[in-house]
Length: 167
Image (cartoon, rainbow, N blue to C red; front, side):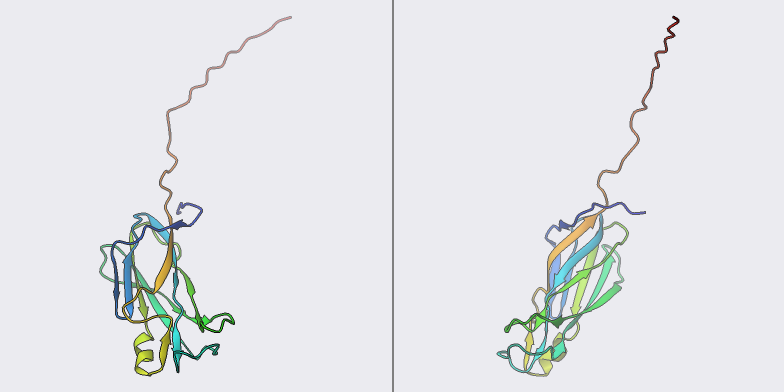
């Protein structure tokens, strides 16, 4: 059974991060992380950069992977797809909230792949929301294993004083 803090904490900004092409990788600095969540920039394709208030034409998507620091293999977590933003005229695709979910306590690396980014740029038109080589995520938060676990302390002794009153 896992113990964890009850509220989400803003994560320490990762010191190890990489934005390369259509892939982002970062390390969670907290050593006892068990739940991780963050926001991904919504993205998608539209014929012209100046087009506004369109239906979602071609939604972008991300593949998210994780691994414990020191492991060599990535574990696929999920595929997240952008969706239509609200009725604002400027932004067509909205941001996506992602939660890694409860995992064994440890220090994790996260890899985010914008799997349609390269394909959209080859189509011409415009990729809205992201571009190659930039950071796709924000608002990183974690829950951690409880840092102070209850432990047994000094034994308690009880001394009883029993008196009998005879009337």
